[in-house]
Image (cartoon, rainbow, N blue to C red; front, side, top):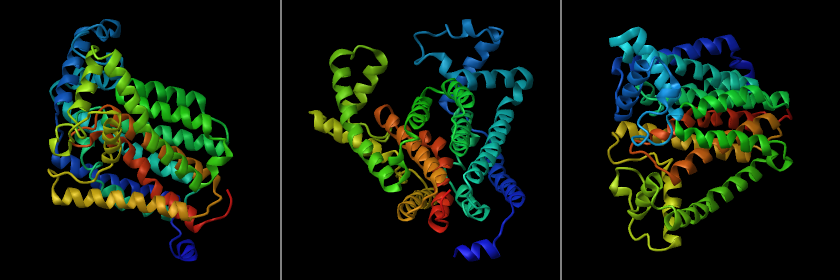
Amino acid sequence: MREILDKKFNLKQNHLYIIVFFVFIIIALYHIRSGYYMSSDSYRFSRWADKLIELNFNFFDFYSIEKAGHRPHLFFFTIPVLSIALIKYFFVNEWQSVFLIINLSLLLISLIIFVNSLLLVRVKPILIFLSFPLIIVSADILTWPRYILSDMIYAFLVMLSVYFIAKSIVKNKICFPELLLIIFLLLASRPSSIPVVFAIIFFVLISNFQIFLKPKNILFFLLILFFFTPFIFAFLYSIINTYFSDIPNLKHLIMMVKVGMIIHDRPDTWIDNQNNFFDVVYLYFLRSINFFNPYASTFSKFHIILNFMQFFTILFSILIWLLSSSYKKIQIKITLFILIISLFVAEFHAFTLIDYDWRFRFPVILPLLMLFPLSLSMFLYKDKS
């Protein structure tokens, strides 16, 4: 198999970028044909952008508005609100269409970063090419870029963090200035970027531990985290419920646990009788699993099929990675980072909120799809690097 790929499918890097552009064109045409979409959060961003323009882009005044009407602090929405305000200022009535074009531009850059990151850790171009059909048929990628939201900005910054982590691994030197800037931009893009920030910091702290150079050790470590996190969450819930139940945001978290909420606005997923500590542990465990659930009763059959294809491809990639017995340190490390970032995002939303349409997993989809060419590379090319 390796010989066939090397001799008959020796794809050049410049050809790979041409194919990436065509992949982007297919996805972009779909989104342009579908048109932009405004959600309830979109209208909130639009209102805040109008206020920012009214204040002549004075952020000190902007951050002080609506103190009782929003949580958390408006700093965490700076980038999407500023982007919309600037677009409105220059394009007025066409601002939604311009925002869609910017989102699609960020998608193109994210796809280029996807390729660059994999090439940086020495994945063969032909293996990267094999992941392109998965990107084209990803229901998440075919949905969220057309929304007037912060999701595409956030997803782009996540991919940027993957690239600079990959660069740090290859150089064997952490790219601190770039990662610190990305952390700042992540925090200014949306409140739910916090788990990505912690994932970056956590990876930097553990990346040189030799124990994390074996796939089975990594999986064992992540499974321990996955298993014990619901217990930690249940303990935190007990403290919040006992001592901090009057704080509005925390009160909302308590209410969602008490009603047995798993997926927001999907009562068919909820459970009953949160009477004791282990009931709460069970609820958080179900939330953790359901973050990656490919099925929802309201999804179309086509949507469900695409989700299952993506879900099983990622599972297959992890299985191949475990069976690879690879010595490719740089590829093992970037795989570790992708798995950490995905787990941290999943657990953060398990503790807070899993949205009705699983919007919050979109930013980790491209990193997770990187596992497919990475696992094939480690399985087929076992030489040390």
